[in-house]
Image (cartoon, rainbow, N blue to C red; front, side):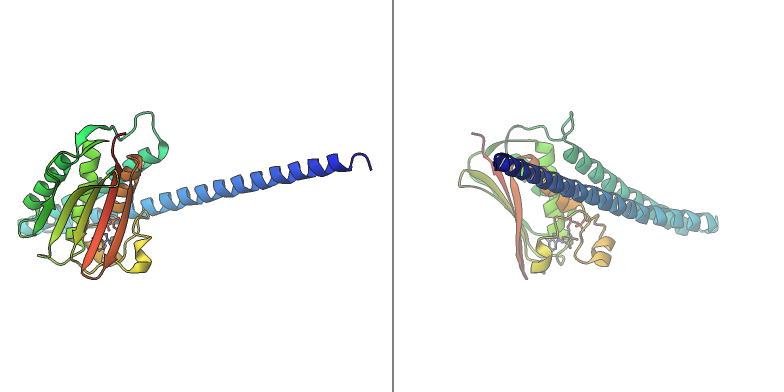
Length: 258
Ligand code: ADP
């Protein structure tokens, strides 16, 4: 009959519209859930140092005034926990700014030689961790890219710190810079115990730690690699991990200017 085709067409259009609404609702629900999780985790992580600070403040108060060493010990714990909280808050703010695609972006690229932040990160690592062998390899010529040197330092510092914190003292760490397939490539390797295959996907997740108690006591926030990933992606690059016992390598690839 006459209107059949039109009705069919309308029905198809209507169904298409429904599917579209359903999938955008689902995406929104997932985004809301991620945000809810993030806020819940962040609150929990902030509460941990706060609880310690309050505890040490009480201990300080009740320590006898004639026990200056004991009081000093409590005070230095308070300082330590406060410093940890600062790192956490800085990382949280940076992630929020990267998520928000702010009017004032936290990454301001300029033309730089990638070897400069690499050498600076290696020098800082050696100064802060005497006795920890670090090898650095950079090409003879400059590796020019458009990047924010401060943020790249942050990426390298995070990867190097992880290589030191999550491996036995004295084991070697290396930092290598190359150009491959039209990309600048940075590799940070360590000779530590490695990361289990099932954890390798999750280590970039916010607040994920492989061994909660151990890495928490090492002072980690569980945000280091999330920050690394967000910063690298903001630069148009990628970061990936390859790991087996005795060898873990984080590879950062950044586009060369066109
Ligand atoms: P954290 O502040 O705990 O170091 P990260 O986001 O930097 O948080 O790292 C997440 C987890 O990945 C760490 O808790 C650790 O378990 C694991 N990890 C990161 N780097 C290494 C590494 N080089 N060797 C072994 N494990 C690592």
